[in-house]
Amino acid sequence: MSDEPLRTDGGRADDGRTNDGQQFDRLPETPADREVEGRASRREVLDWWDERFGVPPETFDGVTFWEKGAGKVWAFAGDVDSPIRIEGLGLTFMRTRQEHWKPTTEAVQRFGADADRNVLRLSPEQAERFVAGEDQELDWDGDWGYLIAAHEIAGEDAPLGVGLYLHGELRSRIPKGRRREF
Amino acid sequence: MEPLERYRPIVDDFDAFLDACERPLPSAVRVNTIKSSTERVTAAFDEAGVGWEQADWNDRVMTVETDRPGNTWPYFHGWVQGQEEVSSLPAVVLDPNPGERVWDACAAPGSKTTHLAALMEDTGTLVANDNNLGRLSALRSNAERLGVSNVAVTNRDARNFSLKPFDGEPFDRALVDVPCSCEGTVRKNPDTFDEWSLNHVHSVAGVQKGILRRAVQATREGGTVVYATCTFAPEENEAALDHVIAEEDCRVVEMDIDIEHAPGITEWEGDGFDDSVRKAARIYPHFQDTGGFFVAKLEVTA
Image (cartoon, rainbow over all chains, first blue to last red; front, side):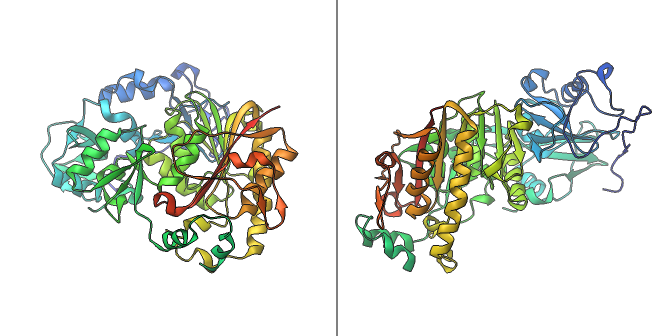
């Protein structure tokens, strides 16, 4: 992880409004609506998925985005008032407040099926190594950085999770608890 | 198996019942329609050479010929949840619609919660509560793997659950799948009876009544509450229903289920229960080679 491109900032604003790690706050609609320094807006999130992966913004109609814990964005399909202090709200969706935003495995599996950019299709052997958490050397002409690793199953592509491609190497970013050895 | 002896008077073909309780349970999964379909899951199992057989009453529930369904591609992709056949029943009986507000009072580890989410097509608001924080993390990880995005997770005592974080509005439906003495899970957990005592049955029954009462209160008039346990003990089943229909504005209603079952009983060890508890279903392991289960459907009347 050490050379992974990371930058964190606490999100402290001059007016004293900060991110509160104990509650879920709905993301502002646009950067102009932002009241908490450093918080991503819905528009930036949708633009990022569109630009990085070609996932169309309509994919997220009916889904709202929330921040709990600095930079951790959650996707929620239901309806509650902001802020809310509970244990969980929808699924963990992506990591913001760092130079390179990073989607979660679960977000990629749930919303990444329509991605058509920065998708790396793996062979059966490569897919097994990837979900076991192994890094592997391989050639790829896509962008460096976070990508969606996919494989073919039952006749169609299925997203596996998030990989980091750097220096000719695919690094698996499958969380420990989700790794499997077949 | 000693604690089961007391059910000899109420279970038909008691020897077959005991035999079934001593056999291990087949591995079963439920197809997660949020991320996949029965066709795609069965095609993936075929590709991997894993045999499968659909349940008679529900084509999204199937037994699979592997001891480790967790180590298959459909599991990794969140296309299936490892879940024994009868545990898919309560969500089907509750029958939530897309867009509704639903409460799962004792939700962890989330097999039934994620089933509710799928029936709601991952829309509306599904409040999943459990009083056990450790078990909630299992719920969270199952819900995430299955791609559930309509769930709001709370860590409260269901008996005095507050609607305040949720606009103070009652729910359309509630699932009350209570902690119980788990007698019906003996095929999965052979040590179930090591800790069994009638005192425990009575003490857990008090908690169950409290949770069911709160669920009726927290559900709107005309709404539905489903009560479920994985035990045979009438103290935790019909007696809980009998108590709650007397204390709260609700009634037991008929269920339309295609799985073989016996009706709820109206007499147990000298106590009589309201006739309407017959509408509940007792599912015994020898009926369809499943675990044991109890389920009842209530309508909220005020």
